[in-house]
Amino acid sequence: MAYLLVLSLLFWLLPVQAQPASTVRIVDRASIVQDASNTPPDRVTHTLSPLPHDWQDSPSALPEQRWYHMRFDDGGWALPAVYVERACTNLEVWVNGQLAGGGGSMVEPLTRNCYFPQLIRFQRSLLHGTDNRLDIRVVGYPIAHVAARQRGGGLSQVRIGEQAELAPYFDARYFWNITLAQVIGICMLLVGLVITALGWVRRQDRHYLYFGLALVLWAVAGTRLYVQHLPFTVLTGEVLFTALFAPFVYAMLQFLLHYIHQPRRWVQQLLLWQCAAVPVLLMLVPAHALAATASVVYVLWGCEFVLTLAFFAWHSWHYMRRDFWLMGATQVLMLALVLAEIAVQKGWLALPKIHLVHLAMPMLFLAIGVRLVQQFAAVLTESERLNRELEQRVADKTAEIAHSYAQLSDMRVEQAAAAERQRIASDLHDDLGAKLVTITQASLYANDIGRVAELARQALTDMRLSVRGLTGAPTPVPYVLADWRSETVERLELAGVAVFWNANDPALDWMLPARMQVQVTRILREAVSNVIRHSGARMCWVDIHVAPDHLRLGVEDDGHGFDTHAASLGQGLGNMVRRARVLEGTLQIVPREGGGVCIRLNVPLALGAAEQATDSGGAPP
Image (cartoon, rainbow, N blue to C red; front, top):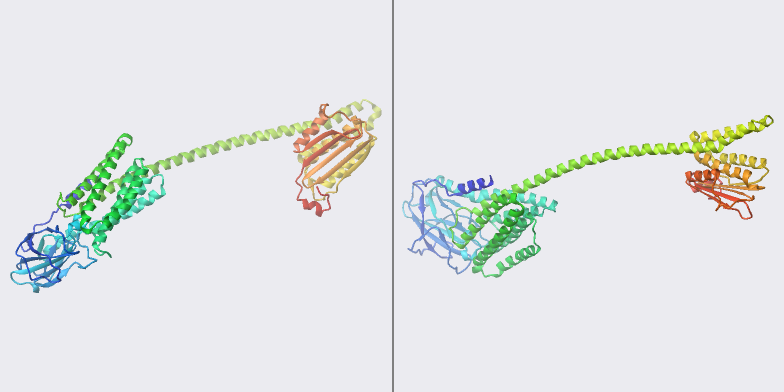
């Protein structure tokens, strides 16, 4: 479709114009005088030169000025006008020695009207019946002093006639050369800025950045088609606009190389050096050699483009076959336009009425831009699809993790229940079971009823202690210490063992969790039971220290003791170690100096800040 648009544009660009009316005079020959005066010279040569006329010879001074003298008869026009298709760089029109109008400044900085048609209206009172004199003053630069033949000095054929009949010529020429160029330039600038921004965001796709930069540079360079007034001389403008094509070539070649993912650092460095060298070269060459130098530069750029296009075609044919035909055909058309432009500059082809390169090249850029947009849309669609797949996978994995976590939670609950059952069984075995066995044995003797009652009472106490561990609320530490002292002292004194009790005085608002109370109580009870049953001790020392962050319990006796390293832990001692491990504490069973056994328990607590103990009168940890 893009190529059909290009062909349609080329068709409409052909000079299709209505046949001139019978009242329009076409002047195709004129006398040419090189004169620097501001008014029509009296000296007129009788030699007539054909129009259009281009300035090929070398001038005596720059800018050069020439007068074109021609004669015509009055055609009876009510509103007479003069239409000049091309006058470069600027002109003034004189009718019978009177200034009829002009295109702007005739001194540097000159008004640039090389691409602008001129329609000069004048009063009918200036005309004679026959043999009217028309003088056109043209200022400009010969072809050798400009970088493009389109901006070389010269004058086209001249039409004289009714303003209404000449207006269609002027309007058509103005539309194709100026209006359309302005619209294309603005569109290319906007599209170039958008694609440049897109390339800047997507750093991995640098070809977007280079292509957008090429569009912006082309749009800026195209402003010379429709900008008439610039604040510098014509020669300065020629150097500036010609040098502007060096970064355009850099961006375009880098786009081609990055598009096929084959950038070359040495190529980039050479192109950057070229961007710096071209303007320096154009500024250093003499004014009369500017056109020749620019032609060499154009040929060099054309060769670079051909080599890059050949490499692009070879690589895309082998690795990007789909892009070979579209991008390849577009680049071939672009190359054809570049070669045609070089042929025009060399004089191998006549100057076209319309600047085809600046009108047809944007259509090719449009085709490339459409392809880039298609690729971006495809990548965006694929990214959205992958994002949806990723979201679905994340949702699936989240559900799987939630299911696994639920299973793990169930397993932990089962493990906790099993551990709790084990603890209850151990408690029942250690306390209630032993008491029931003793009760059973004591009940065999009728005279031991008191002992049976005492054992039953102790069994009930143990059962209550087990239940408290399951459902009981925290108890103030002083109350717990009081219970421990009462039970321990009573048991040891009944067994004939002297008791030395030592405990600190913790704050009343320190609460000991029920489960910890139960475990420590059973450890203390088992230690005291071992002293009574197995140690043969006469004295026992119990030391308890409670702090906000830990609890220490020590039980020592002066009995005959045992080898704590060689002896194996029995059921009682093993349960004590296990209970300490449940409390995340440590239990040590070591020989006591002077005989006996020393049991030390240390468990962590979280009863409050350390200053609470100090404020309440408790001992420091």
